[in-house]
Length: 86
Image (tube, rainbow, N blue to C red; front, side):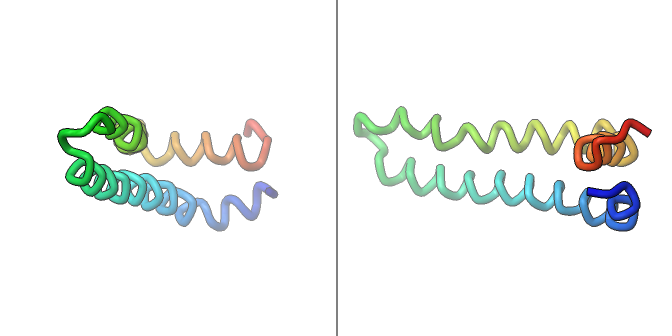
């Protein structure tokens, strides 16, 4: 991706990162809840942790994005997507 293109859409990239991370946390929380109520008390209840793992990772990423700050995240995304270290 070109640097100019990224600069034109950098706010949309940041919003997309926040939205996607929130979506993963919410959807996997719902799936974990459904799975837990279905298999509660069976030997498959340990698999609930496997389904809940993306929730933990997405919440950690969301907190990191919020606490690190918008400008630093946009700089890291720029370096990753464009390949330049300006």
